[in-house]
Image (cartoon, rainbow, N blue to C red):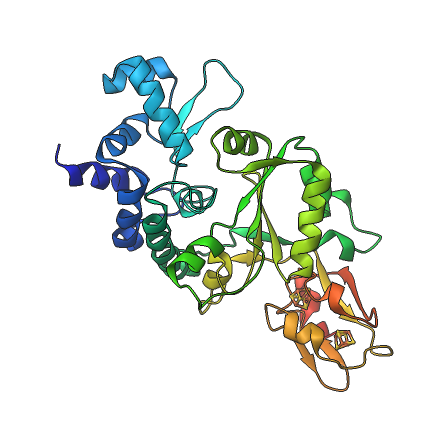
Length: 341
Ligand code: SF4
Ligand code: SF4
């Protein structure tokens, strides 16, 4: 097998998966060349996305077991191999493209390897390509925005509180943002200055991340503090059912870049919208400046466009007159008569 063939074979393995790769093949293959050695690329295809136990992979690959185990662990350290944590006989699976996958893993754990800088530059190019050509054209939302916990109204259900949802996990980790780090490395001096260690992991993905140096273990109280700081810093919480939370900025976040494509609907709004008390609002403009989605206009007082407001709560902590509160989002059929609150 020629070196190139192993990378082409990985591309074929990803083809047809929910995030189809044909439109981003050129930029993805550049990432693959940094993420996998040629030998690892061949092994990744043999392990496959469905994976298997060590004995099965040994049979498929013909690689001697001790060498095989070492290779699989090295790949997990690089974020290309899933190894189910906390078990003597784990399941191994090659990491997919996204959610969480190669789109993220190269940006987690900061700069740790000799190839990290080149990988992060290739990853940034791939992320832009992915946001525009895959996410921007998805016919459905791929990530849910969550109202920051401190802004939730009293009638919010625990299921609508991201802090409550992640409490059940029992194990948490944090890592560098997989969008901001590649942007910072690829385009120095031309990027945001938001917080960097903001990618939150839960449950087994956190255990896997800690075992392989991809994230560091934190307590639940530290999770809450990170959520609070991210909200203060203007970052939007999006919760992924794969057990991690992104804290996204408009500048670097793949989800927000994709969401700005014409007709795109990458982000699902939260169950709540911002509402301004015009009797106390002093039209200072702070909330409008902070809103990542351009949902606030200032006339005699601040006006929130419900159709643009995703209910993130970024506007909430900066209002010195406490004029912003959150109310349940009107049902779609009520929206036309309530476009502005
Ligand atoms: S930050 Fe508060 S006071 Fe200032 S414009 Fe917005 S709602 Fe009004
Ligand atoms: S107005 Fe803007 S900042 Fe405030 S909740 Fe809505 S989208 Fe978020």
